[in-house]
Image 1 (cartoon, one colour):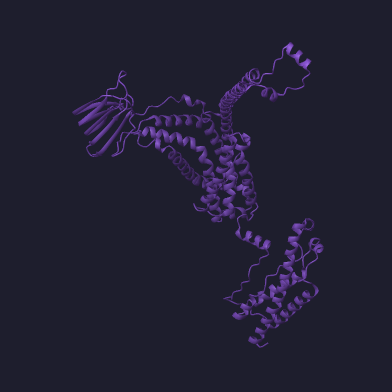
Image 2 (cartoon, rainbow, N blue to C red):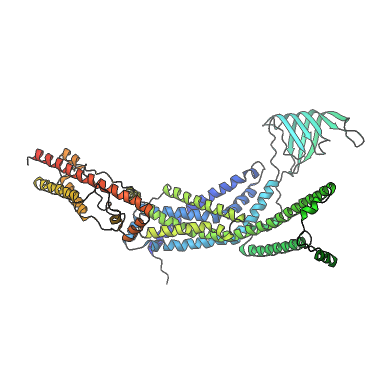
Length: 632
């Protein structure tokens, strides 16, 4: 019997609350981006609310599969960032629950979302894509709403150019109107000028009713019998003139059957059938072209029996074409070259036409194959983004809309760049279709596995201090010592014992300097055949830290300031590159790398010599200060 625990309910509930909000936000952003591309087709055409509602509805259906991965990524980042920020994730792990167990109910939920995404892409999206593109084509063919501007020639009425000098917004009266009527051709243009006028749309929105007052009309009287130099015209003055102009201002839905051949309006089964039929058609056309050119342009030369006999008698092994050409007359040479040039030009044009036709068919096949794979990869991206977002949220431990939004946008931009770039190359035929479409999955899936593994092991992937310490070690840098005066001192230092300990540490430093040649060049062989630590330096460092810890209980500011000069010793950097003997040997054998580490270790040896002298000098100063202040 399946039992859902309270922890699973809590995790799913926390994720769902954020996922619903982020999903609608992402869907809204993608819809605004899509709307911005086609805003010119919507504005100024008087489209009804029902048409706009259909446009937004179908565009939302097509954008749901794209919005799901980003919403899952952002919701997972925020959910586990909130868990980490509120120490809820720490409490779960402290109870012995691993990260995989914590995210297991969300893995099941995101798998369901991936299946829903696939269903939308394979079943709902093809139908909605067809309806959406049908609406867009219909909108493009819809005439714009009539709104004639001032002092600009208005040409959106087919066959007419209208110029209005001034317009009364309240009454709709147009003043100083100039109309060019090209409905019967440019040479038979009619020009009308009127001091005032008014345009009205008929009730069926199929015609414009034009009222003109106090004007003149000019019209050419061109006929076939008259020459083009002398064309009479007719001039007409009028007090009132009324005319009807055809103007279809309504919305008419076009037949969308012509969109059935688009790859995005088909499901996977239909795409597979189309690819098979296109492949067979392309192969058959290619075979026909091959057979045609094999029998015409590139046919094998036919030799009759008499020709063969003549060739055998002449004993010719080859024919020198240049000598035959040079033997011709100048007129024959020109004729031969002209014939060859025309023939090559004809062949070139024919090949370009055939190659364009075949190339277009291959482009259609590649586009169908890309859309077939896209339905799978876009569904899988829901799971991949979850396995990136959930571990990252657990590692970053920042909730809200700050850091999670920045990280999710960066990851989605990376995904979009890889996916769009590789898909474009695959569509051009320069890359394998599967490799191009699956490139984003190939790149991001290992990233999700890496983050999940590191988060499950509580690794410090984004711990700034860990990277700072690594580069400090790599470059040989050390942090400075900072000692502050304590506000409450429980036990005062034993200064008599400390003076003796300071003498002891100074003697050990001098003895070490005498036994080791720290300033001289080290032995190359010993450096790369050694992986042991320097116990003497480790002992000196341990005693020095113990002395500093005890002296830090002093209330003397000068004494505390003198302790700041004690260096932080590196106990093994001057002995060998690493703790691994075989790795040291490999570095030593590879001379360019070995030389770099050789001088690095020599530098650390010289630094250790300076550190030991600094320890002796600081210890003597501290001794003098103790003897002066405490009369010892």
